[in-house]
Length: 222
Image (cartoon, rainbow, N blue to C red):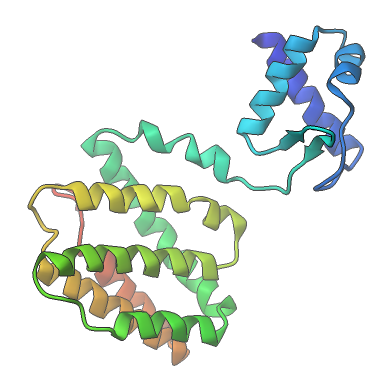
């Protein structure tokens, strides 16, 4: 395993040193084994590790190619490890730190048409009863995911798996504060945020976002 890690690091150094861009080909498995003086199974293990990180891909008759940079696989490894209420509460705090910055980026970079598309979605009346909760959570995800995408920052966008995990946990929470009334309030706040952005009023959008983040604040968190 140690040898495989060393080889994986060396392959990444080849990519950097030789400036091999996305789609560029790397030496064959056999050539890499000779270059690093290790067995082919070790090279194969190193390549599998790089595949898991989204660094390279290999195809028959094509060989080993470099993939476009995407940090999402790195963050996605964290998601299955979020198990405790304390970890979920800290994920909520992380969102509270990150989302105001995401909002500022979206305010500068989002095309008006994309904001209008989100506005039209949020203007549709929510159904009644439990259906309002299901639809409300789906819209909550669509709104925040859309905002993160409109920030046009690959590191922000790569964190969307954590965002989806947050809402998945929210949906599975028995009883509690996930009520029809809470979802209607959240939908109205999302609509206020979008309309403030369309009006060019970032301060008003920020205040609405702050209120929105408080709707599902974990118990015991100030």
